[in-house]
Image 1 (spheres, rainbow, N blue to C red):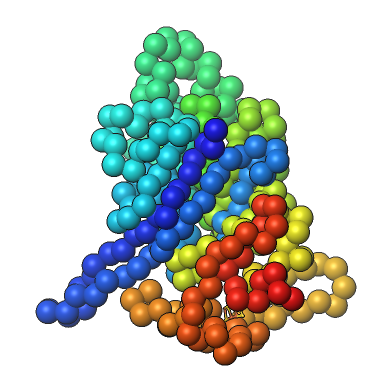
Image 2 (image 1 turned 135 degrees about the vertical axis):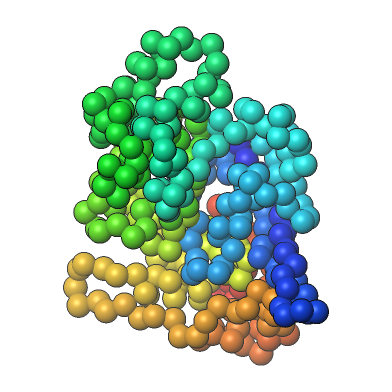
Length: 322
Ligand code: SF4
């Protein structure tokens, strides 16, 4: 059974522009996504795209931090998009999120032990005080901190350690899926590498799966077996990570060309232009004003996300015809 399934998810917001003017922003359109998270479909999934592509809104819908304007969310076969919060206990434990701004997500007035005890009290109320304490010490060690760190406050940790503490808070309740929303962004390469290795290690030891939301393709390649690419609030390509170099969507290929690489004399080529304004998407394919491969139909007709081969979907008029 699919762990998490978004079916035609859409999210729009009404925003004010001046005193009288209101405008509708379409952050996510018609997104259907199955997160099976098995070996065949890919245990870890990367969600990539430029900022403003709708990744963060999609994460908020998949984690039920927000309700969709249209469409459904299924968790282990059950529709949960409109369920009240008190019926989401199992979902809340199984789906944890780590945000980029770890410092802001940790209560500055609480020491590490209190930060870690809170989710245990919520989801494992039968634990004794000793069981909670042992579990906290064990998880601190598992994320590369030490039991002596239990008394320290968030501001006493470095940026990298704060992220480790946020990871500890996520994994302490034995989740099935951890959503990492730009969780390695803003760190230097060596710290990023350490965190990615920590994710892999925790994944292997505890069966944690990841949805890594990132604009950093090398990080996604390292951790994930499947890559979902978003542009203008839609999925434009969904393919196995080991087939990225055979991607069929010009936007995915443009992202790959802008990816920094260590080997050879490769110099990244950045995609010119900006993503479209979410209140006024262009007609036809939303990527056509920037697409180096556009053809006549692209400005008129929007391409649908179609299955090209097993576990490979793309939304481009040229996909499958090259
Ligand atoms: Fe480019 Fe046309 Fe494909 Fe859109 S549909 S990505 S404009 S070729």
